[in-house]
Image (tube, rainbow, N blue to C red; front, side, top):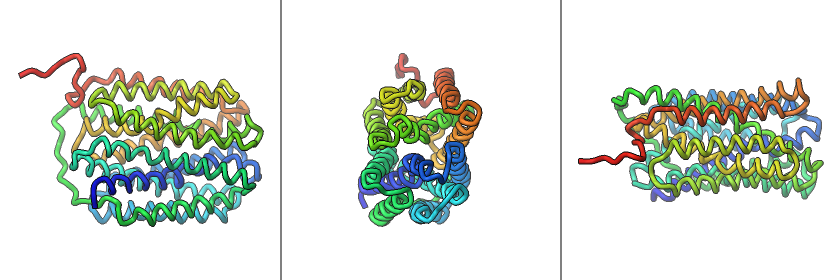
Length: 388
C-alpha cells in the first residue's frame, strides 16, 4: 500500500472520528434545544461529558505501546464512533445523550492519538512530512460534512433523530472504505532519552499552552451553531456557519503546511492570537460578528493543532505517541473546562459573553507563553546561521 493512500486513509479516519464522532453535537445542539431535550446549560454539560471521555481516552492512549494495543484502540475507536452515533438515533433526553457523548469522546481520542502517531511516523519515514501535515485537514473536512448534512436536514424538515442516523450511516461508509488502507502499527521502538535539558520543560509548557487553547476555541466550536440559530431565529442561514468553520479549518491546515521549515513557534503564536480575536468577534453579534468568528477561529483551528504536534516532535522526536497522548489529554482538560465555564456563564449572566471574554484572554496568555519559551536547539534563532 503506497504511503499516499495510507495518509489519505488517515485523513479520512480523522474526518469521520473527529468531524462526526467528536463534533456532531455542535450542529445538533440547536435541534436538541428546540425539541426540548436539552437547554443551553444541559447542552454544556453534555459537551463536557464528551470532553471528559476525550481526556480519558487520550490518557489511556499514552500507554498503548505494543502493536496489538495500538490496533485495539484504533479500530475499536473507529467502530465505536460509528455505533454510538447510530445509537444516538434512539436517544431521548439529557442522560442518554450524556452517556453517548462520553463514549464518543473516548473513541475519538483513541483514534486521534493513534492516527497522529502512525501517520506522522509513516510520513517521516517516507520523507513526506508535508503530506503528513495535511492529515490534520481531515477533521475540518468532517466538520464541513456534518454542517452540510445539517443544512440539508433543515431544508428537508428532519429532526435530530433522523440526522443522527444520517451521520451514523455516513461514518459507516467512510470506515468501510478506509479499513484496508490504514497505516499499520510497528513494534515499539526503544525510547531514546533526549539530552536536551529543556525538552521536558518545553513539553510541559506546551501542554499548558494546548490546555489554554482548548478552553479558548471550544466555546465557539461548541456553541457556534446555537449562537447562529438565535441570531437568525432558526432559519436555514444559521446552518451555513458550521460547514464554513470546517472549510476554513481545512484551508488553514493547507496554508500552514506550505510554510517554509522552521519558525514553528512564530506560526503557533499567530494562530493562537487570531483565534483569540475570533472569539472576541463573536461578542459583536450579528452576521458580521459570527462571520468573523468563523474566519478567525476556524481558519487557525486545526493549523494550531498541527503546529503544536510539530513543536512537540521538535522538542522530543523519539516520543511521538507518548507526547501526542499527553498533549491531547491537556487539550481535553481545557475543552472540559470550556463548557463548564459556559454553563456558569449562562447560569449567572444569562449568556455566553463572560465566558467568551475569558476564553479570548486564555488564547492571549497561551501566545505569550509560547513567545517567552526559550528557543531550543530544535528551533534555532532565525537570525543566526550555523557555520563550519
